[in-house]
Length: 113
Image (cartoon, rainbow, N blue to C red; front, side, top):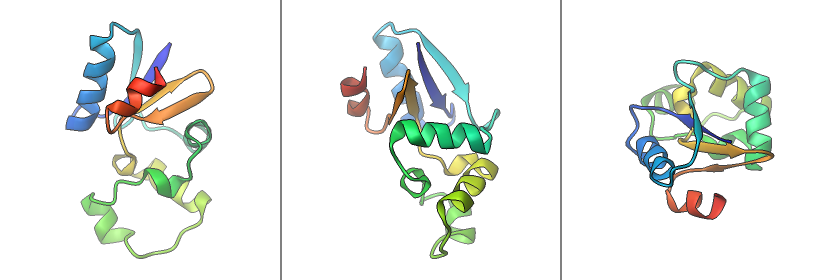
């Protein structure tokens, strides 16, 4: 089964979910804003994405610009920041088995599923 880490307020996240729904795929929807991941869960997802925390940061978010832009953090520190501020995580992220992919652009999902 696919899991989608989804923010219903995000246009791109809604587009990713719609794409999966249109394909009639069974999807477990995780609203990671309302139900944030812990550090271990986020690290596991990063491993499945084969990405570092810095690779999934939404740099256009106001909180990023005000608190984090231009500052240096190691991977563990970024994981803690992303757990505390889940709105900084790019979305959607789609996970299956032992891999995951960023669903923006939606074409990434085409190759993934």
